[in-house]
Image (cartoon, rainbow, N blue to C red; front, top):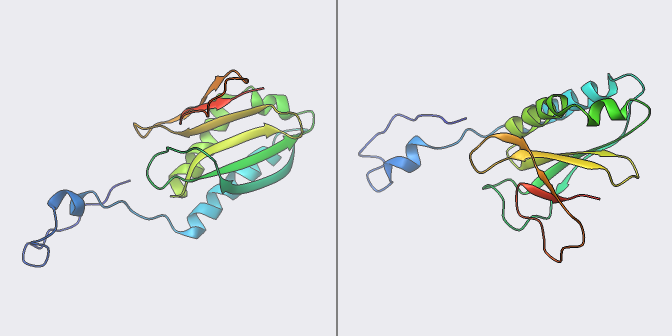
Length: 151
C-alpha cells in the first residue's frame, strides 16, 4: 500500500519527488499480530487440525523483496492437516493477511509437523502473493526467492 504525500517544494527541494510520492505505509505491530492471530484462528477452525506452533523467524534467502527478511511458520498436525495442505486458496488467504500487515514478513510457510511437508506462499517481485515453486532436493544450490527445496 502506498501513500501520496503533499509535496512542499521549499521544504523538500533537495529530495527526489519519487521518494516522497512512493513512501510506503508502515504496518504497526498490532496489525501484524492481528493478522497472525487471524491465521492461527483459521487453522484451529479446521476440523481435526491442531496448530502445534506459530513462529516468525529469519527465512534464510539471500535475496528477497526489500525489507522482507522474515518468514512466518505454521506447524500443523492432526487429521485435518490434509484439508489445509490441499487448499491453496485457504493458505493464500492467510499468507495475504500476514504479508499485507507485517512489513518484515515475505513468506508464510505451512508445514505438517515433523514430516518435512511444507508449502510456502510469499510476496513475489511483482507484489503478488503466490505459492513458491518446489525444486528437487539434492541440488547443491540455495533456492532463489519464489522457490523452496521440497522433500
